[in-house]
Every structure is written in C-alpha cells, then in structure tokens.
Length: 474
Image 1 (spheres, rainbow, N blue to C red):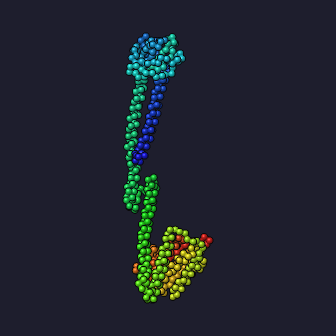
Image 2 (image 1 turned 90 degrees about the horizontal axis):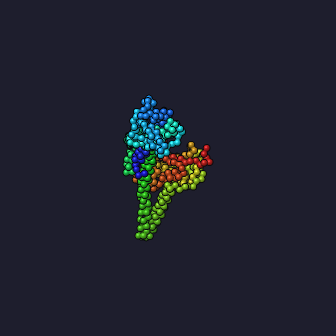
Image 3 (image 1 turned 135 degrees about the vertical axis):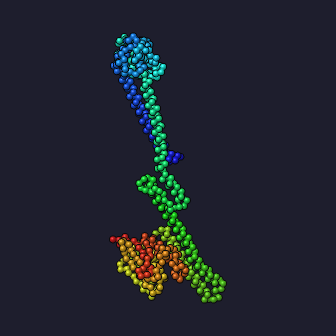
C-alpha cells in the first residue's frame, strides 16, 4: 500500500497478464505434448509394429522391405531379449543391417502383456545421443515366447517441445513488455486528470477558494469526482464567505455596541461627577443630574435588552408559539401611533382575521418597530399605511410610508444591527439602530421573511411574510 496508485495499477495489470499467459502456455504445451505422444503411441501399438519387428529380427542382417518401415522415424530400435533380459539381437529400423549405437535403457521388469500384442507404451531413458525412447514390449510366439522390444526415439518430439517452450517464453516476454509499456501509457493518461486535481487542490489549500477542479462531467468516474469536489468547494467557499461576513458583522456589532454604550455611560459619569462636586448646593442642577442619570440608565438598559434579544434569536432559541391575530396587532399598533402622532394620517387595511403561530409580544414588537420607524424617518404630515392580507398560505403584513424613501445601497444593509441610513448617526434621527434588526431576527425566528421596497409614488414599504397557523391553512 506504500506504492503509488500508478504502480499498483501497473502491477495489477501485469499480474493478470502474466497469469493469463502462464495458463495459456501451460495448456498449449500440455496439449501439444499429449498430441505428439498420442501419435507415437499409436504407431507403437499398431499392427505394423509387430510386422516390422518380426521382419527385421527374423532377417539375418536386419534387412526388410523399406516400404514397410517408412512410417517410423530414424533411429527406431527393435530388440529380441533372452530369458535373462540380455539383448539377443538388436536392429535399427530402418537399418539394412546397421547396428544400433543408441538403445533404450530398459527396466528390470517389463510389462506382462498378451502374447503377440504390444503393451501400453512407456518412456525410458536412452544411451548415447538419444535422451529418451518411447517403448512397447510383448512376448513373441515366433521366438518361443521371448520378449520383443520396439522403441521409437523421442529426439524429434523433444526438440519440437523444446522449440515450443522457447517460442512460448519469447512471445510471453514480448507480450509482457508490450503490455507494460501500453499499460503505463494508458495509466499515465488516465491519471493525468487526478494530477491536475492535486495541483488545483494545492492552490485551494493555499487560500484560493475560487478555483475549481477539472474535468467535471457526469460521463466518467473522474469527472463525477470532479463534480463532487466542485460542489464541496462551492460549499466551503460559501461557508468561508459566510464566516468572513459573520466575523465582519461581529466586529462591526462590537464596535457599534461599544459606541452606543459609551455615550450613556459618559453621560452617567458626567452627571455623577456633577453631584459629587456640589450639585447639592443647587437643587435645580441636582434634579437635572438625577433625571439625566435615570434617563441614560433606562436607555442603556433598553439597548442591552435589545442586544440580548438579537443574540438569543441568532442562537436559535425557540419563541412562544400560539395563535396570534395579526389584524388585532396591526390595529393596536395604529392606535398607539395615533396617540403618539395625532397629526398623522394612519390607515389600517385588515378586513379579515389573520392567524399566525407565534409569540404575541415579539410580533407586536415587530409591527411597533416598523410603524415607529415610519414615524421617525418621515415628515410629520406624511401618511402611514398598514395592511394585513393572506396569499398562498402565508400572512402578508406591510407598513408603507410616503417619505423620502431609502437609497438602493441602504436597502441592502438596513436590517444590520446599529446600521443607520442617516450618516450622521444622530440619535435625533432615531434610536440606536437596532429596531429593524430586531424585526428581521423575530420574523426569521417565526419562519418568515422581511424585505423593503420602494413605495409607489415614493417612500419605503416594509413587507413581512409569516406562515399561517395550521388551523387557518386551506
């Protein structure tokens, strides 16, 4: 397993090829060997073997008609044995009186075959230049029951088998070498996309999360791997971007929170110093200091409560869930606004009961913050319109004004904590900048969505979408 993938694939391919070649060579060799031996054995057990052996052994000079012995290979031996196993007469077939120089080395005990019937052929070693003979033996009635041995040399057969073995070895080595080269090239080409992926992975690990691997296609295994990696990289890039944005928002949140808390703390500290230095000598100054300390404490407490609410909602803590009528909340918010700004024209369009599952207190806070936002950021005579409807299984609540509206850049960030469209950050233009952040967090905690758009004719319209309570769904 310490080898590279290229090495393991190459070894696997060559091992399979070697196993296939060995099986093929062994089967071919064994088949050829059996075929050649079967041919020799057929000659030894044929009737012509007895006729030839009788002819040459009965002839005084081993002579016989050449036509009767033409089917036997040169160096074929016919021998008549005595009762003690010694060679009484030996002839070379064909030989015309020649004396054999190479003869078979016979075993001490010959097969006990039938009279005038060759035994099953067997292999014995030979002397001189002949390595082996294929031999058959029988008792010959013409010689008084003596054994006759007929042996065919296996020189040509063994030479043929040796040539076949050499040829198989040469071809096998050549095929293995060719397979190794071809397999190496194919594996190199096949693994090239993986190497490219490795290079891109190194670039990504260095910090460039925008890079993508290739190939990325569903047609090949590596292509499908590329698709999966690219999908994973997209998620990682999105996660890193989200984390970066979250860290940026957190830093901005901490900076803004510090800024917002510093002002009331500075005021409290200043008025406390006034009291300590002798504000008691002036009742009016003492009363002003106590009142301002109380007001700044209340404002700081409200600010801290709002920040804690946003933090709890960001952590996903569940809110109370029970049927709440948005129509009632909208009408109560309009009544509260008329009490605060009696000169305003505040209308409510909520003809039907619209029930949602949620926290009544927090939903009232959502509508109240939106209405308060419209009152603070529009001229005193600007009308405010509140509408509640249902559409496609959701409750739709909108708060519209006809004031100066919001620039496109502000709409993207209006729901961020402590963000103010007013660049001066003056508190006279309204609060600490947490009202709309609370609206967004509460609506998201209820499974809804809030957005801002331009009002027809000018102004800003905040649209809130909330899921209807299960009992009211059609």
